[in-house]
Image (tube, rainbow, N blue to C red; front, side):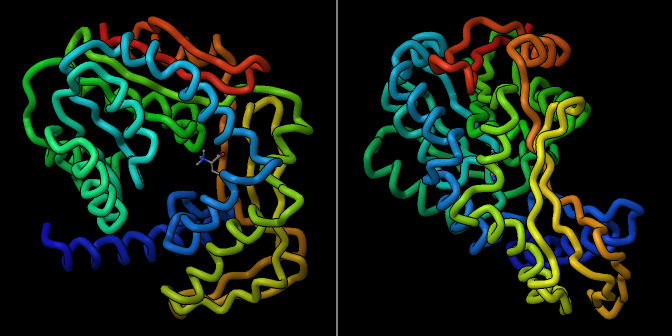
Amino acid sequence: MNMAAQGFAVVQAFEHDVLAGLNAAQKTLPCKYLYDEAGSRLFEEICALEDYYLTRTEADIFARKIDAMAQALGPDVTLIEPGAGNCAKAEPLLQAMYTPAAYLPLDISPEILFAARQRIQQRMPGLPISPAVGDFTSPAVWRELPETAGRKVVFFPGSTIGNFTPEQARSLLGLFADQVQTGDGLLLAADLVKDSVVLERAYHDSNHVTEAFNKNLLHRINRELDGSFNIDAFAHRAFYHRLRRRVEMHLVSLKEQVVEVCGRQFHFAEGETIHTENSHKYTLATLEELLHSTGFQPQQYWTDHQQHYAIYYAEAV
Ligand code: AVJ
């Protein structure tokens, strides 16, 4: 697909998904749409918050264990990163790896991806880098990657896996498994189950950045789909659902109201919510179970001293 056709398809998918989501009994919007330019900037701000322990905990594990990880991955490996964004996490890993064969980042944002390629290329001139633009949950974008000889490792940091329900996570890791051979690897990070006060503070931060991040989705719909959302008539809500082992993010309608999107009307009762994101939390056991069920054998994991966060290395069987 050329860039213009791709842009058109992306707009159509957004319109389709928003209309379908607002028509559902429990109104819902796919969380991937939180990450437009403004949303991605807000998410970066979230990552720097005191209340949001995930990013710094993961960074701390990487900083302490990067050599052990590089060792586990092995020499001459092609590193494939779905949802690579600015590729900031792969760079130190590639530096620590023994003669990496190539780096293949996948992302929906071509601008961020190509800027990152240029940056890494300058610092690692000998490393072949082949980015692919598209949604990593669709097999189509994986087919754009060049054929490579030798071992491959799929790198999936950031606890992005948390955005997928257990069934979706299984099919996503199944898709990853389809891309690799026996003995190839997966380096996967996940946020762990912990005290609900700590969890809820991370998604309802005292700086209100997560609130702005959540509400940005309504701004985006207003802008791109001719929406009439009154942002102040919605509140940010985030809570930990113990049984589902996930933090759910919602936008709560503060009054009965009718909102227009793409010329269609949607009714909101007072207190009715739009479910905008899930962030699933794992235990070491549920994470290992997920890996096993998708054809990966856990080899090693690294965690922080509070066991808030885990990074697993597993190999395809
Ligand atoms: C990008 C999926 C890891 O679930 O913690 C942060 C997204 N949402 N604050 C997460 C997010 C609200 C984040 N992930």
